[in-house]
Structure formats: structure tokens, C-alpha cells
Image (cartoon, rainbow, N blue to C red; front, side):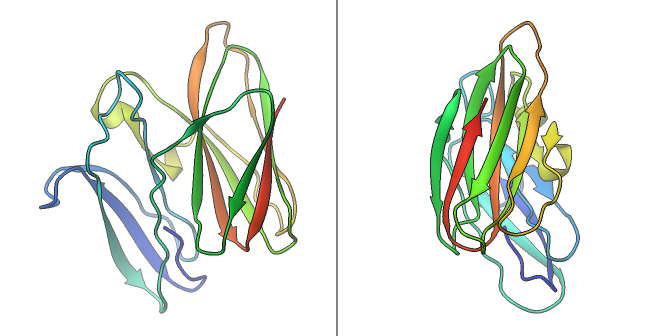
Length: 179
């Protein structure tokens, strides 16, 4: 959920329409994109229907909210992620035992990306639902039009991660490179 720069909205995600069973939440400061990543892969949290709730804390303006259910498996090489100004997030799965560097490069100077790597432990519930604040790895905040990079250390055993590309601003195509 992307708020306007001067407003603060928090995001909660529920797995029931009555919004009584909260799966996770993300509550950061004004102008910061909040997200909740749900690992719906086999052996994790079943996706089913998810229900978001935006809580307005302060400031003026409307937020943009988006769900991305179709995370693609990425590997070494380039992937293109076209995103309009209304697109907030693109999700990927990356499984590796080796050290990997993930770089996202905007195709337009107006684009401002953030990159997060989420880890997950098999099983439903809190192990498979993570907020932005619980990211395993995070890119350093760069300027609009600049590349963002995160590294995943070698583990010896194959681990799977969720890679979250956040479009803070702008429109165009990002290039996501795994090396």
C-alpha cells in the first residue's frame, strides 16, 4: 500500500471477510510503502481469499493498494518488470544455496524502487506471513532513477526466498538481475 508522501496509512491483512483473523500487518511512518508478504507455496500459509484493511493515521490524500498473487520463479539472469504509476509491488520466488546479488534498475528516471528479500519457515501462520519491517535483506534507499541492490549469502542448502520489488514512484520497466 503506497500512501501519499505526507500521509500515514497502516496495512492489515486478514484471511476472513469479517476481518477477525489477522494474518499480518505493516505499520511504518508517513510516506512509506507498507506491505505484507504471504508465502503461499506448498507447506506454507494457504492463500485462499485475503482481505486488506487500510488504517488512516494522519495526513491527507489517497493511497494505492495492490495485491500480487502470481510470484514468478526467477534465477540467474535478467527479468523485466513493467510497472505503471498505479503498480505498487511485484513479487518473485528465488531458490538458491549460493550467494546471489539481486539488482533492480529502473528504465526511467522517474522510477523509484525498493527491494526486499523475505525468508520463510514452512508452516502456516506467522512463519509464512511477514511485514516489510521483518525483511531478511533490504536495499539501501537510493534516489529515483538509481539501481537498488541486495545480497543473499550462501547457505549450503537450498533456501527459497520471496523477492519484493516496490515501486515507490514513477512508471516504466524495471530490470531485475540475479547474479
